[in-house]
Structure formats: structure tokens, C-alpha cells
Image (spheres, rainbow, N blue to C red):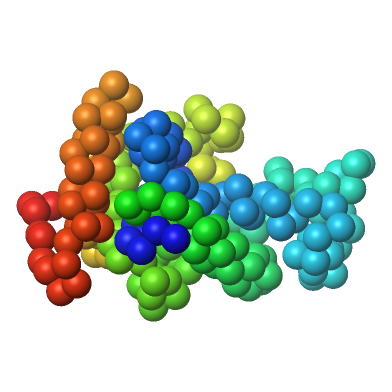
Length: 213
């Protein structure tokens, strides 16, 4: 088991996945909340049954799978509906992340948790040793989201408004990657943090190694 655990988070379309892949390329074990979230709503899974009970069979596509586009439209139009979905999914996602981290090997492991701030922050994930936030200006984030998900600006703005603010995420950060440049810049930033995390993972209990953020 990896004894040193990093929580990786950031707003939608901030570049978390690119940062995650850069860490994985360095041999770091990754537990991804988005992948776990997809697995737990596969047909036959208890979470999908709970979703159908709460939201109705119209949230399923013709193959009996979760219709993600329909669900997205519904929950981002109504905070009550969004909270209901989170109440079904988040406890199961946290459990899956913890199990994946417990089985990871290496100097340290990363848990990618897009909704870490919204899901309770450090109090919900007390087993994280450090939190890394991928930060991006809101205007850049909005443009990337519209392009990536092929959604119009009103929906993209609702999606951003439904998440924690940039300041709220940064308040949790031990480390920050500002992803406002080209993708080619990220591997070097990740390599610097990888060296830091390996140093911290090998430090004696109680030792403090606090670099500039």
C-alpha cells in the first residue's frame, strides 16, 4: 500500500486529466473518481438502481445505461436534483477511491477527485496527506468546457456555477498547478511535484518539507 496519498482536484475543464496522465507516465498509481463513478452506474449495479428509483427510468437510454446527457441537463437545472444524485453517488465513490488507494503500490498514490471541495474537502477525505489543485482562469475554463463538451454557453455557465468557486478550491490547496498555458508545459511542472512527493513520502514521520506553493 502507498502510505502517502495526494488528492488531485480542480474545476471542470481545468486540465486534471492531462495532469493525471503526466503523473501516470512517471509510474504513479492513480485512483480516478470519474472512472469509479462510471463503473458504479453500469447496468445491474446498485447505484444505477438507486438512480432509477429516484429519477425515473427516463434517465436510461435504449440500452439500459445511464443517459448522461439527460442526467446532466436535469441536475444542472435544479440544485435539489443535483444534491440527490450526489447523495447516491458520492459515498460509493469515496469508498471506491479509498479501496483503490489501499491496494496501490509505490512511493505515493494519487486520488483524482474533481468534486473534492464540493464533497466535503479534507473532512470527507481525512486520509489524504496533501491536496494538489489544478487552477485555471474562469474565462479559459468556460471556453474549454464549451469546446470539449460541445455545450452552449448557458449550460456551461450553469455547470461552472454548480461547482465550488475557484477561491474555495484554492483555499484547500497545498500545491497548485496553474494551467493557463500550453499542454507542453505541464510535464515539467508535474515532474517537479513528483520529486517533491517522493521526498515527502520518504520523510520521517513529523518531518516538515514545505516548498513554496
